[in-house]
Image 1 (cartoon, rainbow, N blue to C red):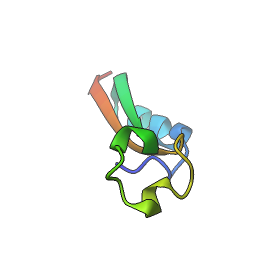
Image 2 (tube, rainbow, N blue to C red):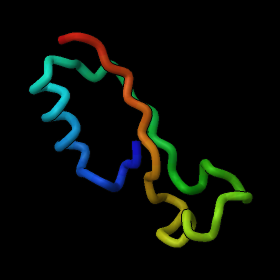
Image 3 (tube, helix red, strand yellow):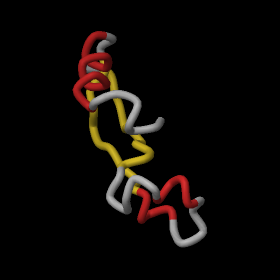
Image 4 (cartoon, one colour):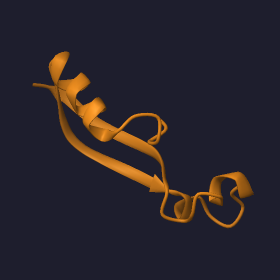
Length: 59
């Protein structure tokens, strides 16, 4: 999911409300997408978080 659409706390609160626990996450920044990433991706800088992969389990 795109990382910029909502603050992390919004996601954490939503997971908690539906009974899920965050076991881990991987965040990809613009720099992780390589030199072939579109210029639009790099416009916000190389450290901008673009994608988060959540690992969830029942709480």
